[in-house]
Length: 52
Image (cartoon, rainbow, N blue to C red; front, side):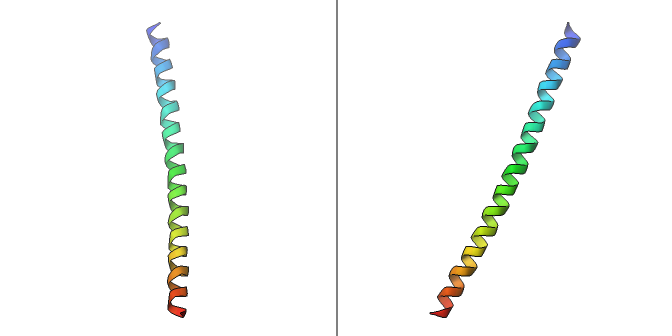
């Protein structure tokens, strides 16, 4: 019985670990895309300002 609960706890822990890794990768991708968009916006904004 104890070994059954041990393996159940290990499976739950591993599932949480996988979930954290997936969420970390998603957050990393979102941050990368937002940063790229903001840099593009800043470059576009400042280049228009120079042309005036």
